[in-house]
Length: 420
Image (cartoon, rainbow, N blue to C red; front, side):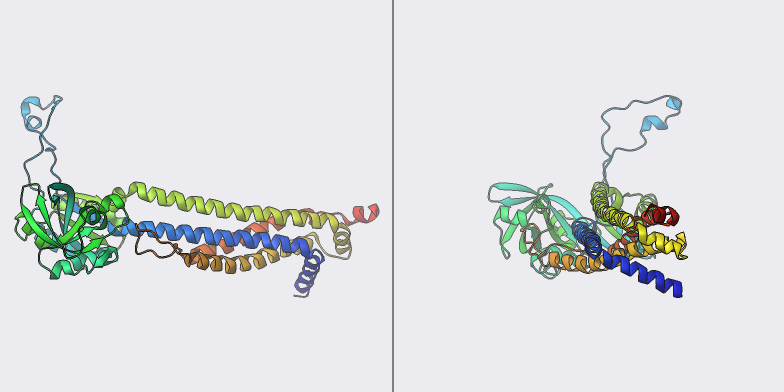
């Protein structure tokens, strides 16, 4: 204990003897930690924002019935061609409907699965929005407003009107903001919608939907399931999509395969549907970490250089310490203590300033017509960022002090004193 106090006192004396250089090193660590925290917090907030626009609006598993050519052709079932290769051209799709067969039983079976959080059925159909003599291509999504909002935060994207009006107002529609602007359709107006089969229906505009993706908002619109079934002239059992949200998103690929085989439908998992988007998020995060860690390493080199200069200037002091009974290990501890003191002090200030800078970024106005629900720049206050910054600041400064301390511990006091 006595030796520990003595080593701590000597370390403090050496720090104060070169307080300007010590301050410069501490500022370097503080700046690095501050920028590391601010950069990762901002990039994390940006990724969370983009995830909200894409991933949070996408079902973990989507079940649907896609009209495809038969996987097995009649010629392949014939014994006459059993051991031969068949080259088949111009295969026509099967004559099937887009609805999911026996959808009620499928939904009931999935609801009983303990791995599932919830289900949102949907009816999707291509339509034409009729504006005078002009017809605009569009897509009507028939949804259960309550289920859609519970699982996919639908209300956050309805910028005008109440999403529950789809259920409460008969024959109503929520238009994509860009589509409404193109048609000059205001809330309360009645628009004409025509299906690909020629069925036409008048729908009342009760709100605008804005996803943040302009091309999507030009064609997308939402109605209730009952209204869309009525538009298509189908019964209330007609469902084209079943959206499933899971407790564990990582199970989505395996469960999509399982449901596809079990219910004889096409199944798309969220990882496959958003593979390119997830790759972009991963690369952005990786770049942020690389830049932040580089800043910490640069600060470590600054501490290394300062300690190296201190050793050359304090050769006499080190020789006297070793001559009076201090071992090389003790000298090693002295310089490591100096380095860690700089790292801890600078790191603590960096965490404080990093949080402050993140909070300042969080208050900067960010107004864009494409994202009406976003008012300020997104920031993620993830505690992991602060933990990683603390660990790296300590490790970086430790190694920055370790190598010069080894050199100091090997100094022969006899050679130094003889040289004097």
